[in-house]
Image (cartoon, rainbow, N blue to C red; front, side, top):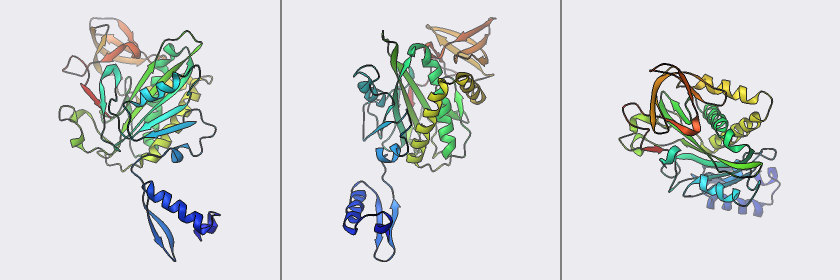
Length: 317
């Protein structure tokens, strides 16, 4: 009997079943066979994401919002409370009204279609660690998707996750200057999950995809849990002996940009060349068309979309 298995009185069990129904769980009850779960809620739930995270840094606290202007802005509010405030807090949103991508581009997603979240971390030498954190997050997002899907996910330097060169996820790392020994850094993640092609504007439709478009029916709760686990491991790895080198190698193995001819924009100037390697600090090394080799840093550089003056006008979650 379910009540006995859960060590609840029949009345208390009925209350819990009613609560689950109010939260969006679809349950079927039978006087002899008990209760069967037919459908889970569309929205992510903090209780499910927090389970088993007692020893974690990333996701030690979790909030799930129906809507937010930007999940990055939400965790910045927590960090504004002072040194160390909000460290490890992750905010998920079902919908963003003012989500943003790298270099101020927009990030749009229909409600319940994506995993959209941000985490705040207090780190020493935060400005220098931003590029390394971008690489660590990229590796973590790729591994989280592969935990739940039969896909091979590549990294398009510096912050896009791609399958067959179509963007399925992205990362936005933000830091703010401070005179303190440690400063807050925010990592925002967006993963396209259930969108159909028509969810994306025609202008960028050939360049983006979702897990559903790739034939994967993903459980967003399980994907979000994998993401928290992978991000937590990657952050721990950054502080371990040899950890940055390990992350560098894992990122290089996934790098879809190596060997390609690109136009890189830095300081308003375009540089053309072939990508020959990634540096340990996640810099992109180009053999330039005019001769010589130059390294470009992720935090001050962007890669131009072929045939355009810059990248996509909008980045869609």
